[in-house]
Length: 196
Image (cartoon, rainbow, N blue to C red):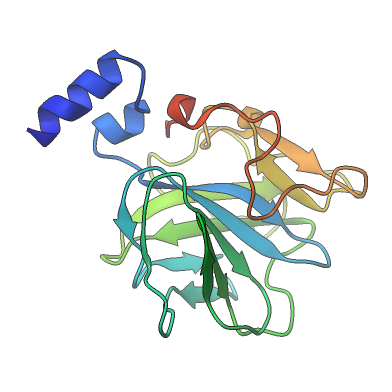
């Protein structure tokens, strides 16, 4: 029954191709890597995030957990992982988690992030800039070079339909701060996004 519903949804253009193939259920959708560090995730399919891990493979790793807050999330939920102290909270379709760190974990000049599910399988990846902090992408999650950044870049927002392609990302800066915890203005609709 589920397989038929997925096929019908794909045929009608209502589901991203990645879901029909059993691929990504969560995407990295925005990152702030300057003074206010955060990683925003967009949930595409009902998922339990307990035990998921967000890592840059060099000096940062955060395992999703939340005392008293369910990590079972519905489609179109935004998950905001903030680099600060705080208590996990839910409000509507926003789940905010805190790393408990007081210092930055993302390199301003270049880094990569990988999201692993609770079984340790890489499900989302983002690479930006250059340098030693940018590690090779897990197979099948990224094509081509990392997202190029400038000295004034403060983050990145997913605007296109292919999260695993640098061309789908837009630079954030002091003039364009981004929208942590909210849909990226002008971004491709949820139904059009897919992972390569």
